[in-house]
Length: 276
Ligand code: PXL
Image 1 (cartoon, rainbow, N blue to C red):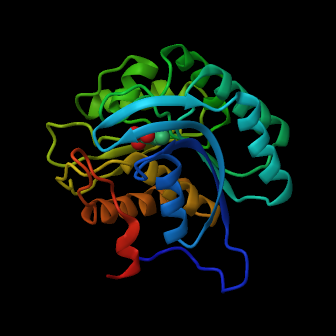
Image 2 (image 1 turned 180 degrees about the vertical axis):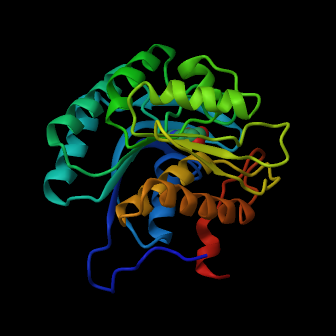
Image 3 (image 1 turned 135 degrees about the vertical axis):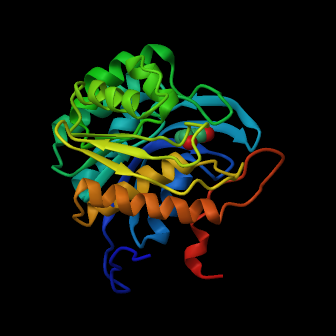
């Protein structure tokens, strides 16, 4: 596949800001975003929202970062270093979502914002308190260039059970009505399908992204990786459909390269990019 333009050594690469939680297992969250950014030749700026204590079998504890510290991290890097795109992952609580939306509106950096509405880990452990769904829909979705829910998140956000192409379109319309410029309804959790089409919608046109399903239990961090690669491509000026197309190819290669780790689920891997 074609990758993204690289900055010559000694010059600053394009920057994405990731606003997300830390995964002590190193496969999802901030760590997935930074791995993706680095292997795509980008520089990742970081606003940590929560420290998760987890391994390959589950999340043991979540320690939330104070909301004003999250907002200050964003302010510090946006006002000094500058960025070409941003993404949100685990936001944990209404307080943090509110703080992120408020500082984003105040700074108004004028760059694309990918909102991955992370609600739970792949083990089903909660990464967002249920009462935060309203805040997510009302304050952050209207600021998003693209939101990227999986089918479990779609059910929580708009109450639609996606079972086929029609209900996937209904879900895209309902999510778009909440204010984001684009919606990507990921089909990866449609277990009955042999392929996992993702549906992208901007309020007028549907774009389908069929993908070969990679059968692996080692897919920890796949959603984060997709959103980080989308933000990376947007940072280079791709259109949203082109950025999503690029990110789908990237995450498919990362799934092919996924490796087992610990006693549970291993992570998707961008290390294939190193050519070994
Ligand atoms: O993959 C979603 C995700 C996002 N952020 C953090 C996570 C996970 C999944 O476990 O731990 C911190």
